[in-house]
Length: 138
Image (tube, rainbow, N blue to C red; front, side, top):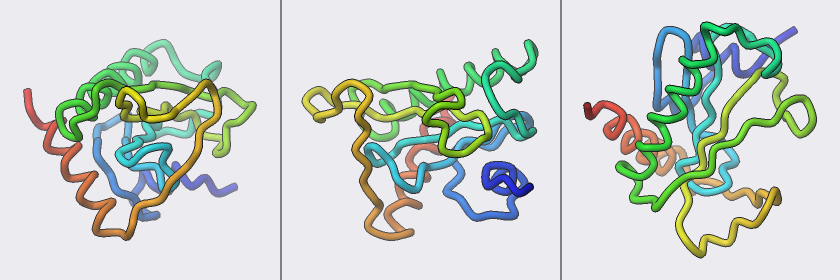
């Protein structure tokens, strides 16, 4: 059975990759809550939180921590929303962490996640480049 996140992790499906590490890949959500919304996924297929190995969990959450900093540094967000669905509302059955840039008064309320779109591939590429640049800083 094909998995779009496994395909992104191997490079066989296109994505705006912002974090490329041996065990984790981070890429822009194609339907972001806010522009710069990143999905972090293990490279190996892991279906749910309960399936994550004890060794992979700190790697995945460390990546989430770094991306949360990158949305502030690279995009000028005031903070971030970090979330993970587990089975229910998990639109792709491959574990992933959402890192969403936040700004006070942005309108996000509770668990209602309105979605937006990038104007085009060039705009998405610009957001991805800004995040990669922020992640490259020590």
